[in-house]
Structures are given as structure tokens and as C-alpha cells.
Length: 311
Ligand code: MN
Ligand code: MN
Image 1 (cartoon, helix red, strand yellow):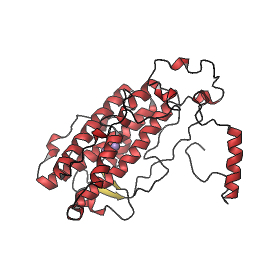
Image 2 (cartoon, helix red, strand yellow):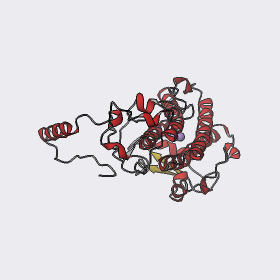
Image 3 (cartoon, protein in one colour):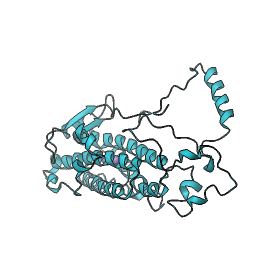
Image 4 (cartoon, protein in one colour):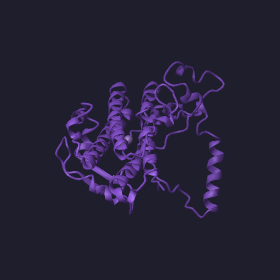
């Protein structure tokens, strides 16, 4: 089971200038072959299907635990796309049935507006739906780990290209963080293979040649040691991943550490309604009145109990 925390893995900037074309490019990191839906589902299915896990516990724990982190990465990619699709000026009248969306014709992915409410989709940068064929779970531990190493390697390749293509602050904050976290997973799978077979994949580093120590959006995370930290996303379980995640980082020489619990992360931004696509604008006054009534009847406080960044 997965327990959910209503925070983002890292702080994301609030909406500014919308960037629909950039949002379409960032979709590759969501539903692309090497996107976060793929990393999440690959490790999830490998952990579901893992046989003989008691005799291979550290490897099972590693894969199952990284799967949990990947869920949060999907959430972050969605937050970045949604922020980039938000027009803070469009909070009033969408002017339908006039040409409220005409300015978006030919820019980015039309489905962001026609199929969704300026929201992220489970698609790649070309609008192709994410595909279950992207999941490799053979049951052979060496093959699965090798596949995961390759997957993380390409995921970082794609993240750097999106970084270079999209200058929007949300895309930069996203890719800066994910490049560092992807590096952790890449090293984790390399170390797992080394423990299992003696193969020294660290000789392949850095692959691809990404100078994360020179990327401004990566630097603060490296300074905090996130490149050498594996979070344990469980109160009591997956403790044996420390049998793999130990020793020195192959590139920086820093000590590898397991941190018990998820990252502290940050509160999400509460993105405003976008009436031009009818997203979140159902009878606002009526809804507010209804929620007030429901809250009172349930014995809840008058104010929302959940927290957002921009409250
Ligand atoms: Mn990821
Ligand atoms: Mn990863």
C-alpha cells in the first residue's frame, strides 16, 4: 500500500507568464518512454512481481522503495505543467462563447485546453498516450536492474534536453531537482548490479555527461547532499536498502546516506480557476456556501485544514 502526503518533493515557483509550448515539451517527462510514469510503473511492477523476496530482501526493498519516490516525481511534473498552463490574468471572465482560446491555436498541445482544463495529461511531448509496453519486468533480477539503470540514464538525458529547451522557471525548478534525484537512482541501480555481479558500472559515469554541479537549479540540492541521499519512504519497511545504498558516491566521493522518511518537501501552490476552459469555476459562490455547510455538519473547523503555499 502507499500512504500519501499532501506536499511536493520540492518547492515549485507560483504561476507567472504561461508557457503552453514549454508545457507540451515537459510532457515528455510525464508520459514519455523515459518519463516519470515509466520509472514509477517499471519499479512498481517489478516489486509486485518479485519472487523469493525474502532471500533477496535488499534488492526487493530498493526497487519497491524507489517506486514510491517516483510517484512523487509524477506529482511534481504535473505541478510544473499545470503551473505553466495557468494564466494568472484569466481568473475572471473567459468570455465564452467568444474567441477566448483563439490565441492558443497552434501553440503547444491543444488537448491541454480542449481535452483537459489546462492540466497535465498522461502523454508524451507529441501527445502520444503513455504506454504499458514501456514497462519491463522480466523477473530476472540482473536484467531488471540493468533495465532500470538504462531507464534512469535516459530519463536524465531527456531531463537535460527539456532543461535546455524550456526556460520557464517551473520547468527549470523541476528539471534541476529531478536531474539530482535521477542521479541517485542511477547510482543505486549501478551499486545493486555491482553487489550482485561484481560489474563496476561506475566506470560508465558520468553518463550522459551532465555537469549537474554547474547547473544553477541543481546546485542547491547538491549542496544539501540530495545527490547522495536515498529517502526511505516508509515508517517500518524497506530497511534493507541500506545494504546496497552505502559507501561512496562514484562521482563526488561523498558518503551515501539513507534518510528515514520522505523528503521534507514543500507545500503545493493552490492554482487559480481558469474559467476559459471551465476548470474549477463551477458556481464559485454556491460551492463556497456548500463547503461551509458540509464542514460545519462534519464538525470541522471553519477554515480549510489542508495547507497550501500561497494561502
Ligand atoms: Mn523520477
Ligand atoms: Mn528515478
